[in-house]
Length: 115
Image (cartoon, rainbow, N blue to C red; front, side, top):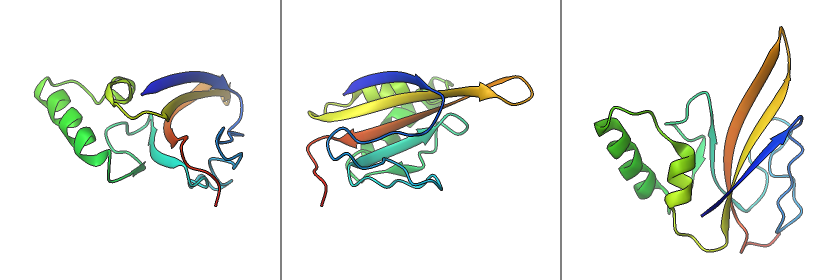
Protein backbone atom coordinates (compact mmCIF):
# COMPACT_ATOMS: atom_id res chain seq x y z
CA UNK A 1 0.00 0.00 0.00
CA UNK A 2 1.25 3.45 -0.78
CA UNK A 3 1.92 5.65 2.26
CA UNK A 4 1.55 9.39 1.69
CA UNK A 5 3.07 11.58 4.39
CA UNK A 6 1.58 15.02 4.96
CA UNK A 7 2.20 17.78 7.48
CA UNK A 8 -0.77 20.02 8.08
CA UNK A 9 -1.95 22.63 10.55
CA UNK A 10 -5.58 21.46 10.50
CA UNK A 11 -7.72 18.32 10.17
CA UNK A 12 -9.49 19.51 7.01
CA UNK A 13 -8.90 16.25 5.09
CA UNK A 14 -11.08 15.14 2.17
CA UNK A 15 -11.24 11.76 0.44
CA UNK A 16 -9.76 12.08 -3.07
CA UNK A 17 -12.19 9.45 -4.43
CA UNK A 18 -15.47 10.82 -3.06
CA UNK A 19 -14.79 14.42 -2.04
CA UNK A 20 -16.30 13.65 1.40
CA UNK A 21 -14.63 14.97 4.54
CA UNK A 22 -12.80 11.94 5.93
CA UNK A 23 -13.70 12.82 9.53
CA UNK A 24 -16.55 14.59 11.25
CA UNK A 25 -15.76 17.61 13.42
CA UNK A 26 -16.05 15.31 16.45
CA UNK A 27 -13.30 13.05 15.10
CA UNK A 28 -15.34 10.04 14.03
CA UNK A 29 -14.82 8.69 10.50
CA UNK A 30 -17.22 10.23 8.01
CA UNK A 31 -16.16 8.96 4.56
CA UNK A 32 -17.41 5.59 3.34
CA UNK A 33 -13.89 4.89 2.06
CA UNK A 34 -12.20 4.69 5.50
CA UNK A 35 -10.75 1.21 6.16
CA UNK A 36 -8.45 1.92 9.09
CA UNK A 37 -7.40 4.65 11.49
CA UNK A 38 -4.61 4.85 14.09
CA UNK A 39 -3.37 7.71 16.27
CA UNK A 40 0.15 8.10 17.63
CA UNK A 41 -0.92 8.05 21.29
CA UNK A 42 -1.86 4.35 21.08
CA UNK A 43 -0.42 2.98 17.82
CA UNK A 44 -0.94 -0.67 18.78
CA UNK A 45 -4.72 -0.17 19.16
CA UNK A 46 -6.36 1.08 15.95
CA UNK A 47 -9.37 3.33 16.43
CA UNK A 48 -10.97 1.64 13.42
CA UNK A 49 -9.90 -1.40 11.44
CA UNK A 50 -11.90 -3.16 8.73
CA UNK A 51 -12.35 -6.94 8.93
CA UNK A 52 -10.04 -7.44 5.96
CA UNK A 53 -7.05 -5.86 7.75
CA UNK A 54 -7.60 -7.36 11.21
CA UNK A 55 -5.71 -10.69 10.69
CA UNK A 56 -2.77 -8.93 9.04
CA UNK A 57 -2.62 -6.37 11.85
CA UNK A 58 -2.77 -9.09 14.52
CA UNK A 59 0.12 -10.94 12.85
CA UNK A 60 2.15 -7.72 12.61
CA UNK A 61 1.58 -6.90 16.30
CA UNK A 62 2.52 -10.47 17.32
CA UNK A 63 5.83 -10.18 15.46
CA UNK A 64 6.51 -6.75 16.98
CA UNK A 65 5.70 -8.10 20.46
CA UNK A 66 8.08 -11.05 19.97
CA UNK A 67 10.82 -8.61 18.98
CA UNK A 68 9.88 -6.42 21.97
CA UNK A 69 9.34 -3.50 19.60
CA UNK A 70 6.40 -1.16 19.64
CA UNK A 71 3.82 -1.31 16.88
CA UNK A 72 5.13 0.29 13.69
CA UNK A 73 2.01 1.44 11.88
CA UNK A 74 3.89 2.86 8.88
CA UNK A 75 5.81 -0.40 8.32
CA UNK A 76 2.57 -2.37 8.56
CA UNK A 77 0.78 -0.16 6.05
CA UNK A 78 3.65 -0.36 3.58
CA UNK A 79 3.56 -4.17 3.83
CA UNK A 80 -0.14 -4.50 2.94
CA UNK A 81 -0.82 -5.47 -0.67
CA UNK A 82 -4.15 -3.80 -1.48
CA UNK A 83 -4.37 -2.19 -4.92
CA UNK A 84 -6.12 1.18 -4.85
CA UNK A 85 -5.92 1.45 -1.05
CA UNK A 86 -3.85 4.40 0.11
CA UNK A 87 -2.60 5.22 3.59
CA UNK A 88 -2.17 8.81 4.73
CA UNK A 89 0.23 9.62 7.56
CA UNK A 90 -0.82 13.08 8.66
CA UNK A 91 1.11 15.07 11.22
CA UNK A 92 -0.63 18.18 12.55
CA UNK A 93 1.62 20.75 14.14
CA UNK A 94 0.76 23.69 16.33
CA UNK A 95 1.58 25.48 19.55
CA UNK A 96 0.20 25.08 23.07
CA UNK A 97 2.74 25.71 25.82
CA UNK A 98 5.33 25.17 23.12
CA UNK A 99 5.38 23.22 19.87
CA UNK A 100 3.08 20.18 19.73
CA UNK A 101 2.35 17.62 17.06
CA UNK A 102 0.02 14.71 16.55
CA UNK A 103 0.25 11.97 13.93
CA UNK A 104 -2.54 9.80 12.57
CA UNK A 105 -2.63 7.09 9.93
CA UNK A 106 -5.76 6.72 7.81
CA UNK A 107 -6.40 4.03 5.20
CA UNK A 108 -8.79 4.84 2.36
CA UNK A 109 -10.15 2.49 -0.29
CA UNK A 110 -10.03 4.65 -3.40
CA UNK A 111 -12.16 2.13 -5.34
CA UNK A 112 -15.21 3.21 -3.34
CA UNK A 113 -17.46 6.00 -4.45
CA UNK A 114 -19.87 8.22 -2.56
CA UNK A 115 -23.26 6.60 -2.02
